Length: 353
Ligand SMILES: Cc1cc2nc3c(=O)[nH]c(=O)nc-3n(C[C@H](O)[C@H](O)[C@H](O)COP(=O)(O)O)c2cc1C
Ligand SMILES: CC(C)CC(=O)C(=O)O
Image (cartoon, rainbow, N blue to C red):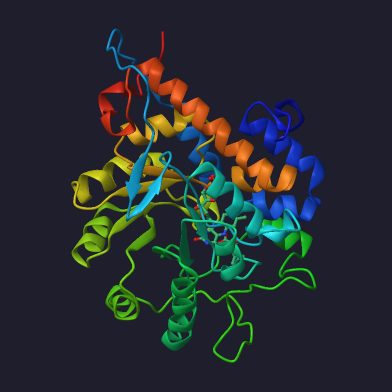
């Protein structure tokens, strides 16, 4: 284990430690967002606008954070969001992240832009889900999906907020356009073993869901839904879960903060499938607010990369442990034992005082 004071007492301190260790170009790739980074900032700011109205004398007792998601049992409603290029943060890359996820008993969503083969990531532990960018070439998509399924991935997370690539000016300024020599997107190999470039696909429509259903019987989640009408369409097209996300502010700058989008999506979905959310969660109390507003679980993006940069698998584990302990304490302090028992009534935007 890492000494807590060596890596940080909270995620902001872990981020600061990561920044000291990382190449500034890679720090900016991880930390940055699109355009003016309004959405990037808004994700965290949305949590700062919520206040908790705890209940007292509820005799809630010991907390129990466990739940089961799409057939994957998890020890807490906090999962690892898909993020690209973990080998920029640590030589072991996604394998270290997967080991931490397995030790912590949670799901890691493997990015299609992972820098370790999905088979090696799976060997480090599970459960894993696999994130997919919808590629124009369905045959290629089929190759990738078959490989992820064979490796043991238990759900597909299809990213739909990226018909084109967001404009990330930090990367443009640094001229960071590709992985350094020696690193490739190991899961972008076609049937002949050649690595394809990551491609965005502006031509894809709702027929995608049916096409993916033809490839796999795995649960399908849509990642990147903000509009209630799309949430409704997603359910009508038979998706198994909706992930409210604006890609950590890296795609459409000016897009709504995910916490502000969440209640509309939850209302539109109306309990028919689980709603998950990511973006800007940095404290157990943030997790609690998202769950109270209707999310079944949340995902962490950047904080996992900070932990990885600081201490490999132990660093990621430290991040997950911090959030778990913080969530547990926050639940006790609002008088609730199980995340599923949280209620929107505990959260208010009312100004304090
Ligand atoms: C460096 C980085 C790389 C990312 N790569 C991917 C990716 O490959 N696929 C994807 O669907 N989302 C990707 N995302 C978005 C995350 O899955 C997630 O939506 C976002 O990071 C959550 O916000 P947070 O970083 O504030 O926790 C990436 C985010 C970051 C920061
Ligand atoms: C480089 C991309 C493939 C991944 C990424 O940065 C993102 O999805 O935000």
